[in-house]
Length: 252
Image 1: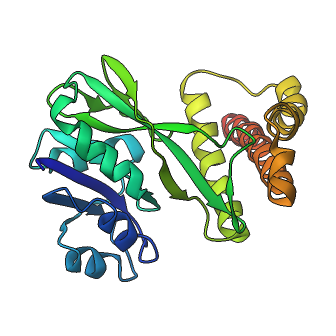
Image 2 (image 1 turned 30 degrees about the vertical axis):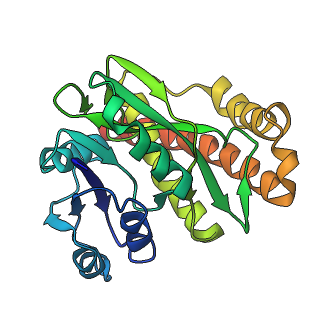
Image 3 (image 1 turned 60 degrees about the vertical axis):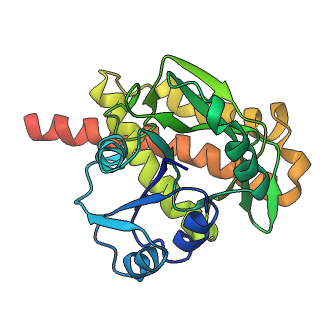
């Protein structure tokens, strides 16, 4: 079908083939790689992808560049660690003829972590906009929490699968990276470090994830996830404090 599968990558050799193979109905696959040092590019090319090398620009700009390389207006934008479930692939094939060009389509995303599918703690259904028409919609320029600007959003029923972290160590590294981006984004919007939020937000995040959103239903992985979410919030505000302290010292 006239749909372009678009993926951005950096060292995704463990995931990229599964991602591409999950959408056999597309006739165009675009991979924009940020100079991977593993076999990502080789594997993607073997799967029939057109691969472009592009220096990292931030999530929003990188995905916008990747979308611009697509041959078709309909774009299926997946992260390399995502894959369509067979049921979702079938649903998209059935719905293609009736898709709304002005809409973005939200997929319910189910994540696999610590040996199980996580279905509580705010992780499911984690709706993500993954299908849109680029003649009507485009990515914003956000470095993190990027999104496609669409006139309306519609939901599909079947699950998008997500292998969110390769290990606990990968989760720690990811939390560190995203907390840095989150701190920079808050500061860029004019926000200042708050002692009140520093002391209360991590705790409230744990309560929200583990109790309110029933993370405890996912067993020990649910507890680990809640602690990780709390720690990520802690890091974000701690990095804001550190950045303001460095700036203050440099100005004195």
